Amino acid sequence: MSEASETPEGQVADAVRGNWVDRLAPAPTRPYLRLSRADRPIGTWLLLLPCWWAIFLAAASGGAGLSLHELWLFTGSAIGAFLMRGAGCTWNDITDRDIDGSVARTRSRPIPSGQVSVKQALAWMVAQALVAFGILLTFNVPAILLGIASLATVAVYPFAKRFTWWPQVFLGLAFNWGALLLWTAQSGSLGWPAVLLYLSGISWTLFYDTIYAHQDREDDALIGVKSTARLFAENTHLWLRAFLVATVALMGLAALIALGQASVLALVLALAGIWGMGWHMLWQLQRLDIDDAAICLRLFRSNRDTGLIPALFFAAAALV
Image (cartoon, rainbow, N blue to C red; front, side):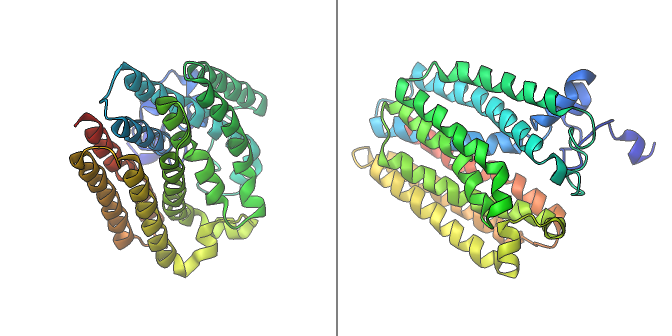
C-alpha cells in the first residue's frame, strides 16, 4: 500500500503521524478536533506547563505540601489548557485562513482545505471557550479576573505577524498567562515569583517558537509575514542562546524569591529543575539546523520535555 493511500483523509500536513484523531475519532468530529490541534498535542503542553510551574512553586513556597486544592488546580488547568488552546487555535485559523492557504505546511488545515466553514469554526471556538470558562469559575475571584483579561492576548496574537517582527512575544504573552493565573488561584494573590515565571516563560516561547518559525521562513518571506526567524536569520543561534540565559535566570530568581523561607532541600530541588531545563535548551541549540524543517519541528516538539523538567522538580520541592 502506498504512503498516499495510508494517509487519512483530511490529515493536516504537520500532524503527528498515527495520532488518535486520525485513527480513532469519529469522522464527523475530526475537522473540529484538527481545528483544536488535538492531532498536534505539543501546543497544549506548552500552554499547560507554565500553569504547573506556578501551582507547584507556589505550593512549595507555602510549605504545606500538596492538597486536594492543588490536585484540582493541576487537573483543571490541564482540561482548561486543552480547551483554551483549542479555542485559540480555532481563532488563529479563522483569522489566518487566507495566509494558511498560501503556505505549504498550513494549506491542509480544516478551513483553507474546505473541511470546515468559518461559521462552523466560530461556533466551535465559542463552545470550547464556554466550557473553559466554567472551569475558570471554580477558581478564586482574582484568578477569574486574570483569566478574563487573558482573552486580550489571545485575540491580538494572530494579527501580530502582520505588524511586528516579534509576533513570538505576543504568543509568549498569551501562552504563559497561566503562570500568573494559577499562582493566584493557588496562593490567593499575585506575587513577584509569578511575574518572574511569566517573563521566563515568554523568553522560553521566543526560544522554541523561533525554532518553529524557521519551517515557514521562505513562504513567510513570499507573502510578507513577519517572524523572529526571518528577523534573526543567520544570527538565530546567538539570539536563542540569549533567550536560554534569560529563561534560566528569570526562573531561578523566581525560585529564590518564592522559596526564601522554605527548606534548603526544596530550594536545591527547584534550582536543579531549572538547571535541567537550561541543559535541555542547550541540547536543542547544539542540534539545531535552521535550514532543516524536519529538525526544527522535532526540536520544537521536544520542548514538552524542556518544560516538564522544572515542573517535576517544583512538584518534588512542594512535597519535601
